Amino acid sequence: MDQRPKLGEIPRQPMPERSAETRRKNFEEVFLGYDEETAVKESLRCIQCKKPKCMEGCPANVKIPEFIDLISQRKFLEAAKKIKETNSLPAACGRVCPQETQCEGPCVVGIKYEPVAIGKLEMFVSDYERKHSKEVVEKVKSNGKKVCVVGAGPAGLACAGDLIKLGYDITVLEALHVVGGVLIYGIPEFRLPNELVAYEVNNLKALGVKFITNVTAGLAKSFEELRSEYDAIFLGTGAGLPVFLNIPGEHLCGVYSANEYLTRVNLMGAYKFPEVDTPVIKHKKVAVLGGGNVAMDACRTAVRLGAEKVYCIYRRTEKELPARVEEVHHAKEEGVEFRLLRSPMEIIGDENANVTGIRTQVMELGEPDADGRCRPMVVEGKEEFIDLDAVIVAIGTTPNPLISRRVPELETSKKGTFVINEETCETSMKGVFAGGDAARGAATVILAIGDGKVAAAGIHKHLS
Image (cartoon, rainbow, N blue to C red; front, top):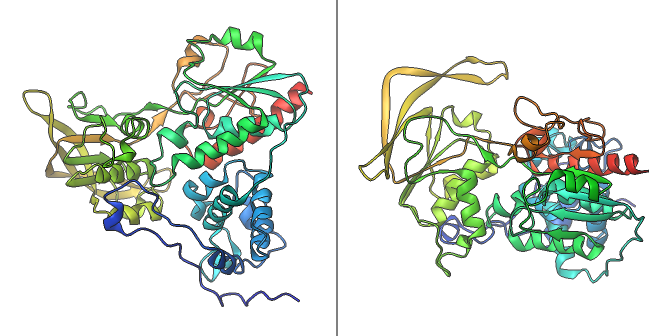
């Protein structure tokens, strides 16, 4: 007999988190996780739809109702296995995916009540598996074919994970000294602890995936060499080239791209501050330009490094902020000041070329543009100056053209992304596939994982 409660009988279960005052002083993860009882209680809110709309919103095609049903039966390890049938990075996705616009957005329960906390449940089972699973990974017999994955970010890891299980000999080349791509260098420790990424990477190593770090494809290893050595190639090189505003003063000391700032912090041990000092400069008054999730990460990182004032400067209102509501809420709690309806005009410096402030133009919202967002309009004669010693530009990134410039046969878009067949992720060059930010521009982790899976299927079809 089904003992599930009636719809709406159980409210959405909040996940406990560290206090804002505690968070400001360290890089420990904000969320503390569900305990078993809370996870089961939340899982019982799922009504097990016959046509689950939640799955339609998941690029990795996770069998959401099935893994949640297993949680309700207290089969936590089985739930983790169910997720990993289609998603090899659940610990990351449970923490950083925008569930509110993907799986939780179309949740039927959410029509009348709050949607089921799918992301938090995914986080719970991935953490449970890491702590309790004793399963020994068995390698699949090799089929003799070799595939090179360029880039060890979410797209590359997903592609490698699917292909190794099909018997392919997989080698992943990574330009940096740590495997994980944006999961490691771009997302702060307080949102996604490095040890969780390392756990997933070690699982892939146990399956037989080979990782080679400090190798830049196109430089240390030419593309011609790769094509002659491997039967197929997947390009998951991300979008690590920062975009700037091209305003006066961006050359000054103390101006960073968010990409550079977060990479310095994540790869130079600054997340261990204050226990371990760091070579990253700890500024006192910081402005972050932009309103997306990367901007929130930069703001909150600056707070943790001891900044007395951190401003988020954005040219629209809070309603239009592209960052997740959860991230904005946490930023506010931690003391970030939002200077909305402000557009940067000039970064000011002293005689030694050090940042001393920023001049902004006051804006107002006009008519909606082609994307449906209200266009920011200048309010003539109204400006604002903010006293600063650092500016972090977080308005987006584009793919690094390192490979495309050396391989003109690879067709790219005006934005510099690889042009691919959406059904297979194959590029204009036969046997070469691409996905994630390298093919779609800066996007989400789960979309990159989805591309990696599509590419793996495309490569398998190509080599079969």
